[in-house]
Amino acid sequence: MQAVLLAGGVGRRVFPLSTNNPKPMFKILGKPLIVHAIENLKEAGLNDIVVVVGPNGDPIKQYLKDGTALGVNVQYSFQKEPLGMANAIEAVGDKLEDNFFVVNADDIFEAGLLKEMINKFRKGKAQALLSCKPVKETWKYGIIQKQGERVTHLVEKPPKGTESSNLAVIGVYLLTKKILSYYEKVGVSDHQYEDAIDAFIQEGNNVEAVNYDGFFAGYKYPWDLFAINQHLINKKVTERKIQENVSVSERAEIIGNVWLSSGVRVMSGACINGPAYIGPNSVIGNNALIRNSTSIGANCTVGFATEIKRSIIGDNCLFHMNFVGDSIISDSCLFGAGSITGNFRFDGNPVAVMVDGKKVDTGDNKIGVIMGEKCEVGINASLSPGVKVGPSSIVGPGVTLKQDLAQGMAIFVEKENYKVAPNKLISR
Image 1 (spheres, one colour):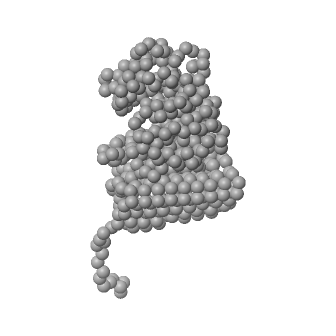
Image 2 (cartoon, rainbow, N blue to C red):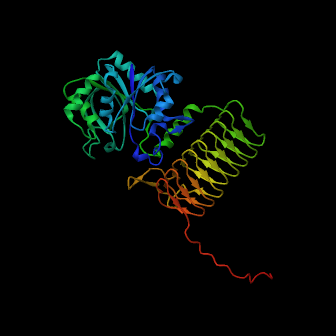
Image 3 (cartoon, rainbow, N blue to C red):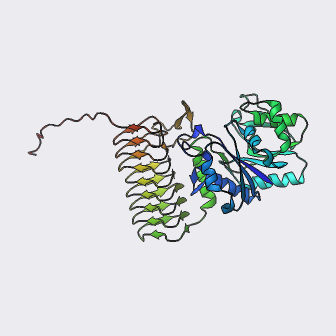
C-alpha cells in the first residue's frame, strides 16, 4: 500500500528553526524528522512513498534521493503554494493509488498504529479509516462522532461546548482516491481537507476510526520537539551503545543508556547522565555535564565546565563554560565563556513564547532559548526563558536578552556606566 508524506508546509510557527531549511529536515538523534517518519512507514510495511514538497523542498530531495539508502521507494510531487492538505494530495495527481495513507512528514507516532489500520482495512469493509484518541482541549482538533466503529461526523476545531465527543482525529489517515472529487464540492478553505472527509461521510460512505492510545506528537511549535526527542530517545537509546573509534577517559563517567556515535571523545572529569545521544566526532570536554535526555549533533565541542540539560543541539556547535537548559540550538552556533540560558521563571508559571506576534503558552515551566543556525553569543550573556534568536544573529557580551531577536540581527550593550578613580584603599 502507498503512503503520501506531506512535507510542503512553510512552518512559520516554528521560527527560527525552519527559516532556511524545510521543517521536516530538523534533526534529532542524527536524523531528520522525515527520516524517522519514513522508518515508521517502513516498519509497517509501507515501502512505496510519495513525498509532497514545496518550493523549499530541494534539501529533502537531496537527502532522500530515491529512498534506496533507506530501503524504500520515494517519488516526489510538487505543491506550488502551501494551500493545505487537500491541495497537497491533489498535487500527487496520477501517482495516487486507489487507497493510500496520508501522514505529515514531521509527525512522530508508533508504527503499530499503521499496522493496526492496515489490518482493519484489509479485514473490514471501510472505504476510509481515521485514527483518533481522547483529548481535553477539543477546540484545537478535528473531532469525530461515532456510532459503533463507524464515523458519522467530523468537525474541524468545534467551538467550546459544541463538540460531539472528545475523540480527536490525529494525523494518520487511510483514504480512497474517491475523496479527491469532494475537495471541489466543499470548496477551498482552511479546513477543506476535513470538510471533504465529512462530506464523504454524509453521502453514506463507510468511514471508520481506529482508537489509538500510544505516543503521538506533531511538530507545530518549536517546543513540540522536546516531546518528540524524549520519545525517540526512549525508543532508540535503550542500552549503552558505543560505536567505533570512541575514546572515553578513565576519569569520565557514563551513567545509564548513552549512545556515543563514531569518533566521539569524552574527556577527563566529564559526566554523561543518560539517556543521551552524542553525534559523530563530537567532544565532551573536561568537567562537562550532559543530562536529562539531551541530543547533541555531529562535530560539536561541549567545552570545559559546560552543563547541557534536556536540550537538542544541532551540528557544529561550540560551548565553553556555559549552562544550556531546556533549549533548542540549531547548527553552527557558538557560546562564549560564561553565557547562560535562563530556563525557569521566578514565579514558576509556564513559559510563554511569542509566535506570530502573540504570546503562546507552552504549557511547560522550563523552556530555555530557541535559536536558529549560525548564531553567536558573547561572553557572560544571559538569555531569558522562551526567547527566540533568529539565524545568523549575535547576542553581544554581557547582554541580557529579554525579547526575541530577528534573523540577521545583533544586540550589544551600547553604553557601560563605569567610573575610573584613584584607589584610596591602596594602603590597606
